[in-house]
Image (cartoon, rainbow, N blue to C red; front, side, top):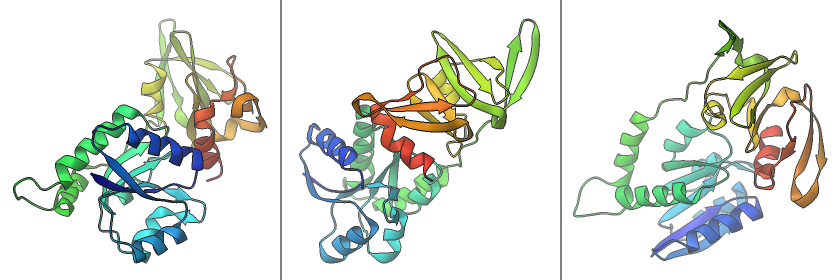
Length: 255
């Protein structure tokens, strides 16, 4: 049995993670669900350490990374967050995996498999802290594109990433819309392009739309827990934030 603590300040996200853990083949016991730095500090100073911690990075009262300086956490940690700029900090603080929200069941299974491989003793060998240090040596800060090469007719030109108001899929084609309102056909698919955009400035609000923070003008509550956006300039696609991305969008926008 794996004894787990979840540190997550969004109740729906905590419930979803707990449900995903309960579906795993190996039995998992959730010892506690903690929603703040303060509550986590108290728990880890009072109770024996769990086998594994799932930890969101941004909590209501600060970054969860603060917990490591206020309490002894001797368990490996799987970080769950909407941002990837904390990756190096995570691996320097017991991190064995870094999952981006919304969580994917297959990625969760792979993370648990890594936990078993690195953190469960199998006939001796180095401790899990030493193995995490080896992982850290392999981690490099992600590189994001400063410009994209695009084509119109037989001509090539480039558009600066900072000039893109949004990137969106229209059928099988993907376009970038700049702040001047000009549309550029992009190479590749939306998922691939998303990985090349700096997450501090861009956020994927739905399956077909990634927006720049400076393009967001107004936000309205919408049906079924979704949000409706007013963008400037606005692409010719649905401007909604998917329900499972609302929490991450709010966290990103309020950073």
